[in-house]
Length: 244
Image 1: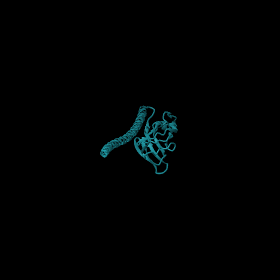
Image 2: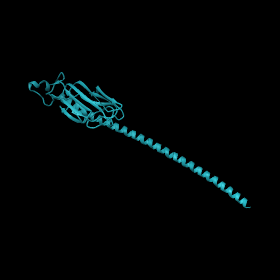
Image 3: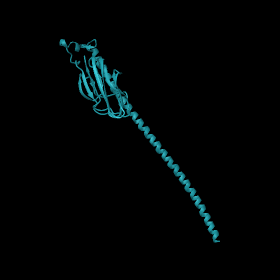
């Protein structure tokens, strides 16, 4: 009788062992599915963060562009006011693009409201890492501003007196890469200065001679650049003066 009982107990143990193994396999399979879902959720979260980061960068770029446009709008308003003042002034007329304030100096009729000498020199006081294409460089540190033609808040030079001008500007690149800049007259490019190097910092400079009328606007703009070239402080400058 005992051998039969032993066989019966052995069969029961084997049956229970097989059922327990099935349960363990089922639980293990469920755990693997859950872990896979968790990993997928983590990947989705990482992708969402990348999308959010990209959108934030785009929003920052748009804000900077809007700020630049508003500043240029204010500068154009000031230019219009200057032109209206010129048009309405009885003590100021133009002959061949030269104000009477300059023509009549020898006759003792010099008008102090219009300068006979214009010269400015300014440089960038801080390195700009996040450059924006088609943005005006604001050379915020002013060394010289005879005639008050240059505005360091906007980076705009507004011609206070008609004549022939010499402009020079330098571009310093802090990190390896490239930076392309244009000299802009009344919204149109008239000259360019580019710097590039794959291994080191670099600099470039350019000179341009322009005939300007009263109220003409001159700026230096970044038109294209590599990922993070860094517009180098102190090495990036803008200068101009009148020849005649």
